[in-house]
Image 1 (cartoon, rainbow, N blue to C red):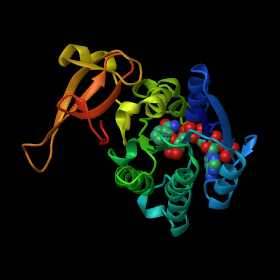
Image 2: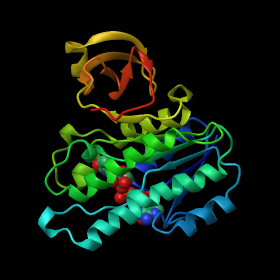
Image 3: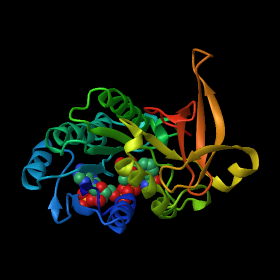
Image 4: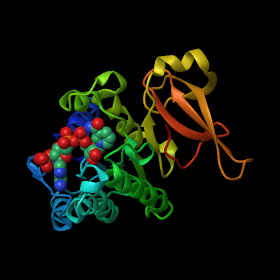
Amino acid sequence: MKIVVIGATGTIGAQVVDALSAKRHEVIRASRNADTKVNLDDPATIRALFETVKDVDALVSCAGNAAFKPFSQLTDADYQLGLRSKLMGQVSAARIASEHLRDGGSITLTTGVLAMHPIRGSASVSLVNAGLEGFVRAAALEMPRRLRINAVSPPWVKETMVKLDMDPAAGLSAADVAKAYVAAVEGSQFHHLLLAQFSRGAEDLLLRAETSSMRCPACGAQMVLSGSIATADLQDTHHVFACTTCGLSYFNRGHIPVNGRAVI
Ligand SMILES: NC(=O)c1ccc[n+]([C@@H]2O[C@H](COP(=O)([O-])OP(=O)(O)OC[C@H]3O[C@@H](n4cnc5c(N)ncnc54)[C@H](OP(=O)(O)O)[C@@H]3O)[C@@H](O)[C@H]2O)c1
């Protein structure tokens, strides 16, 4: 496949490029400073990219900025940054890509753990991530020409935690996170939408989980039932399955992958 990766030089993006290249895909590396220039904050540059690079099968975005600051210090400009860059930048990229991708292609955006697990300082980032997840769920219903749209929701990445002087033990390596993007690009079984997120401590899962007949869409290993989430309608329980090897988790109903929900 011919795949445009926006954010190709970043902590996550560089691993996504490596993982896709290792699978013999043709990868176009894009960012503000990469060889293929694009600025998510400026839709004209996204249009220019797709008018220059033709016959693209998939768009992956691992980019977009938002301000992480205490609530009382977040300014209008801070909120505008997240809305313009990470939220509307990726929404614009998805809209423009949907006009240019080849039939049956895919769009994969990046949200993040803070959508579902906010922490102090994350108000603006959580707003943007949750907005993206809502957009992807809804847009998936109307994708033209058999296009699929997915979002990967990474947890804290080990390499980022090291840069921020945090203990990286609880994080997942960027190389492992990249597996979710590969699954989203290659995984035709997801139909329209997969919000993938990695659970931590995949090795623990075997100790307390029920095995299932499912295979991990990212690495093919055994998946286990790692939890259940009841919805407002108590008859409608979503099961969360997790891979025992790479930790990819996702919601699943009746052992058949369904159009997605974010998972923990
Ligand atoms: N790292 C984590 O722990 C983590 C966890 C959850 C979610 N995420 C999300 O994952 C995404 C990538 O994170 P990361 O840690 O890999 O970031 P990163 O290391 O800072 O890399 C960001 C990448 O995006 C490009 N970029 C930045 N702004 C851009 C723009 N306006 N237009 C086009 N490209 C742009 C950068 O290249 P240029 O500077 O050349 O443009 C770079 O290639 C972010 O949206 C982040 O919120 C990260």
